[in-house]
Image (cartoon, rainbow, N blue to C red):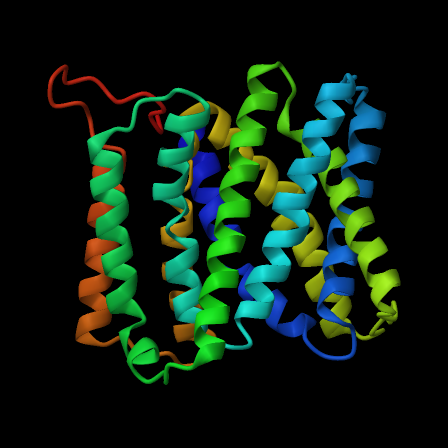
Length: 300
């Protein structure tokens, strides 16, 4: 079951970049984010109410959902999309993939979980692999003050993503399932971002064509309803640090899709990077050398 959720998350989030690209145009970026998570929250609430699976939360649960919505469905997306205007998308992917290491650190500090050496080693190897994958893009980028700002925003977005992982883990330990907490978190996140748009005077435009509507629906259903539910379920089952290795594999899927859709050509350094990413994945989920048994949070 865990393996299916893991592969599903990687495949879905590894292809959402196409939909995100098609969202750029008439509608402002924050408004598109509001549409995405507002609709996703609506879909989740309808599903949960019809199936009578919407869990009741106390004040603490709602408060955590507010912060989770701010971290996972609001600030981090604004940070990543804004950072992409100043630094290469490959660099954004590399910074975002440090979520594996941040999750391991935060799980140790806030949840008291031990940091497995193989997770840190595998995460570091995956990051080096991503560096090779995107080396031509990174080497061709000229450093500037905007670069530092972009890096700062990408790091802030990654830290918000990691914080959202920790909050989801806390909610699941309290018996709340990701479907319920995601519904409330997405609703709170969309509401807070809507308020920000109103204060800033950003118009709520809509692009009524198949390209925008189709990409929006893809981001709502597979990208948000299915993707976030699958991923945060993994956070609860496997631990935040192992689940976050998905972030290293997203760019690999994206590059393979790009090879088909946009003619991306694999190079020797990129293939070497791919091998390192896959070896990192093996390390993250390898069996314990001491006991011969799978580590906590196994895929099988």
